[in-house]
Length: 471
Image 1: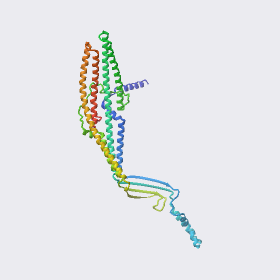
Image 2: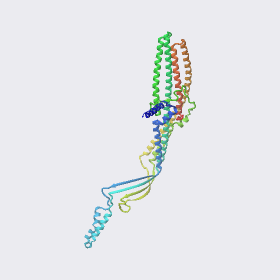
Image 3: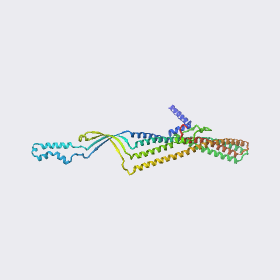
Image 4: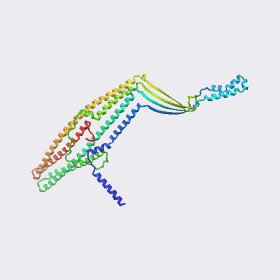
């Protein structure tokens, strides 16, 4: 028993250690997000449903075979003879004997009555219980173009679902990247806030010593303590924001929110920047963007809907074949037997007059197709503008990073001179605080600029439709 408990404890500790050592890269986050994202799963199921719908539409070209069966109980049976006719035939011997009395002595009247009763009984239909069945084969020959139009629509719908799935994939990658780099940004700012807090605490200690030596005033000490409190408050806010950002990234990746994760890039002082090789090609964007592909397919679907509506008011021709079986059967008089027959034929349906309904519906479908075409043209213009905007932001982010690196160098040099002057007693405390604040701001701007370069590159790839899990 003790051995079992020990094994369980070791397993639990091993699991905890493994959880605490969870290190995620950007690629692993993207992979988990693409695997676990609920909206992406919905998009995949819609694509699968559209594929089955296309396969089902193709079966309309093929012959259809169906079977029908029925049972009917009638209160009364169908009679071929009236009541007067049945009475007359059953009593024809008596009627004849009345007219010719000598026949009665010969027994002819009884014989004729018997024959008449048998004839009446043979003419009974016995249709109180009726059984019927049919097997029907139908082969469409011409349906006004309806089958072809519907097949085209389902084919375009499948491709439309695939384009929407691709759009969901890109949105998932983009949101995952944003959450990932937000964690990296806040992790770096946390280290920055801790470093700044250490600096101001060191300055606070030095000022306290100087106050005791009489070379600094209490006002200097209070100013430094205010900065210490501000640094602690900033660190608290960064910690809270970092915790929420990690939870958001866990949610994007589809893992429990309380999973302890650490990102591969959050410990780096300088991030690996992407090569500036993504060209802002509008033609590439128009060819690859899922939105454009979806609108083009929607435009084709609406054009096929015009054909579908028109087909409702065109002649249709179909070949049919049937095998019918009934009980009672009428192929050998009325018999209580199952007997059947087969037949083949051609069915033709020609709409003649509908008060212009077909014309109005076709015009309505054409108007919807025109609206879809205008929407496509508008989307192309907006995407062209978006691609150019993303290209400008990429260049702006690169320029911003260059300026931030220069500012960082100046801030570090300024802080070094301020600390040196403060130790020599030639620079007041306020100047040191200003230098530390400038260094903090410059370092924060550098981090933001590096991440901005990363994200603007992702935005540009998405704008031109080349964002995928491998990029």
